[in-house]
Length: 451
Image 1 (cartoon, helix red, strand yellow):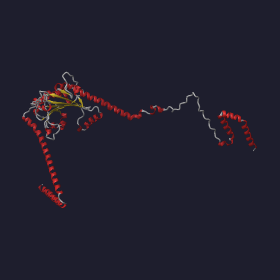
Image 2: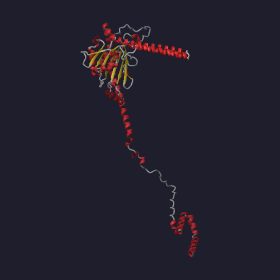
Image 3: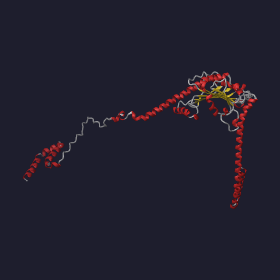
């Protein structure tokens, strides 16, 4: 007890002795005063060490000098900033394949379309001189004057990336000429491969795709008044149509044997002809004609030489006045004369051997007007086959009209019956129907008896 009292008294004395200093230090150094108080408290409660805790750490000084720069507090530099560390090219395999396929298609489209245009232009350049020499107007524009040099490329019209066309008119015995150039779809590799493989595997898809040219000539055949416009001015007059451009109609063709069966199946006019080999022709060519006299007239040495020069690229030359599709009406059987040449284009674009056949074709209408006038016996034989088809069409048309008349008769009969039934009461209608049923039964029994 005495010790406790001493301690209390000692503490009071120490506190009283240091009151002035403590006040000074507490006012001048507040942190130092708090530290001393904490230390004294620790000594006072040393008996309760189990419950004592470490003093709170002194806070760091937050104030800085006025001229000092504050430290940066941004994110640390990691690989998030480096794309090449976060990703690799293996993650873009699908995109890479898409880009390669797109580039492949674009390159094929660009070079394929350019190749088709180049091939078509080379053809028209090789044949432009012959066209300009034979026709007053070539191409789809206006007729040029004598002092104007025309670019042959303008004679050609691009209908699509694989179809090109040209046109010519203004020649004696010829109404107009059409040129159609059909090329393979080099600009679309998928379609090109499908057509090539499909034609090889399935015969019905047709032959393999190839570059082709077709030339169609439509003669006047004495119908200049229907196509040639009148001359304007004081000396206006009708075009002369004295019949000098007329010639007898027939179907005649020189055909490559590899194309013969397909041509006969596809064209009605060729189906009217008979196929006969000719000693003047090589083994790979044949003649399809309605009369041997026609063959003797038009299978000339110049024509044979021009065709043989093309080799296997030649497909056929047809002179016809019948439709290519089987006619179904009498109007479709009306003769429409035309000349049709078709051949494949060479891969090297060298047309030196092809121009003679083209020039011969342009002059062929003059030969037809001069020599296509045959004996009555020949014309009678030619007409006999065509009259059979005309009679078939007439018979089919008559049967169709008879069916229509029968249908109209039945319709009128039914309308009359319905009107009669409508005017009767229920009992009379029943009697009418029973009578009608009995009549039909008698007719059926009569038919069975006749059989």
